Length: 174
Image (cartoon, rainbow, N blue to C red; front, side, top):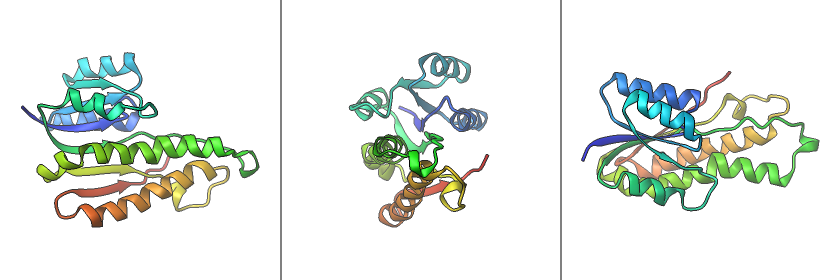
């Protein structure tokens, strides 16, 4: 049994950088991604366990939970995101649904799936927004809406899960 941090979207630039920082700090992480080749390579490089999972598919949480069932979960970083750029006149309901599922609904599912473990370890959650949620950028209707929802979720969960679980959100820019 070991203390681990879950990194959703581990093969992206933010997720892989976080994984490297944890390795450099002598921490353990469990990497999660849908990109098999990149995930295996990162896992081998850092010596971390991993789960190949797509957050858009049903049952992704159960798959991850079975892979980390013997570990103490100290933190969860949901580093998954998208950059869907379209003018408002071309935005469809399907675009919005897909973006919300990827950025918001699956983040909620991940948190629900590991809430008890995080509470037991006095763990932390880190979510990612975007400056697009606060600044008015052209063609950012889809992603700005989803990331604004992440900011609302962060504030709500910080109040709801405190003091057992810390919840924070980072809003990077290009």
